[in-house]
Image (cartoon, rainbow, N blue to C red; front, side, top):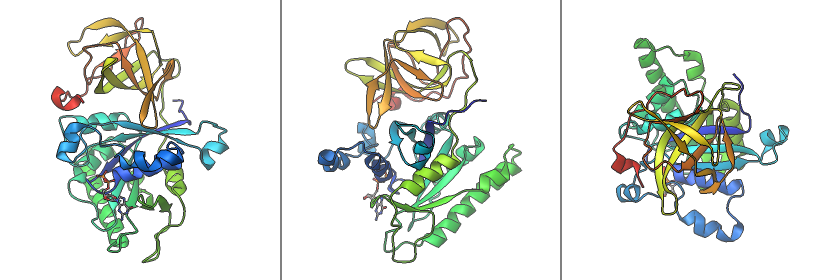
Length: 340
Ligand code: GDP
């Protein structure tokens, strides 16, 4: 199957407070999303934790995406002037709100597992990590907060490796078809999201990495493949989340698995009741940094938002009018939790 090299779809899995928001913030900041003058203000607002319910509970519930355009060596080698787009999907780190984790993972081709250098992996991340391994997603471990004076990096790395090993063994014992070698061949990056630094080597005690996030970006790009798709296949896109806009009404967040979507196009909406209805895409939006911006067309592998289908719900799909091939439904959430 052909594969895109200009995009990566990645989920971040982390326990609350291990630094997910700070890391995505630093990735955006280093790829030039924030102009110097608004850095402090914008960075002060927490990038990924924006929903009210999330704020109230202090946790992340909605799988949202942030697009980072990386223009470092890998992008330059490919001659991609706009860089490689890394869509970072936020997943709940610790509990499942009825399919939330599955839906987040269904959008991505790999996982960044972020672990605090002092606290180590906490049992709650086991659930999400198991699902990622089950889905055969490659994992990149980021040991974050290596600047903490109470860091215990080496122990934390071995605890993380043990966790991966025990999950892999469980899956094998349950007869799940997994590639054990691939699953356990996991790179480790040492990072301080707060300082915007990373390294492939464990920093000596009391020191912090001196490089920016390039080692992290480059490892992510090498280890996590670009989205693959079927050449010439008709449109197949999955609704993985919903949002609402005062101007556009309900917005569906989709991953396009095959084909393309154009603004103004009529597509077939494959509903939960098994029926197909023709609907028009009145607006197509792609993520740029933290914002959604209008686009004319999006392709297989892209994560997009569409407006124009007021009753669309999570788990449904958009397919080709003339050659409809609906995707399997993903578990439905409590709509009250899914709507912002
Ligand atoms: P999230 O809940 O995973 O999104 O975590 P946040 O990004 O909100 O970070 C939680 C806390 O850890 C905040 O007080 C951050 O400033 C702090 N933090 C994040 N990254 C680092 C780091 O690399 N080093 C240190 N010392 N603190 C960090």
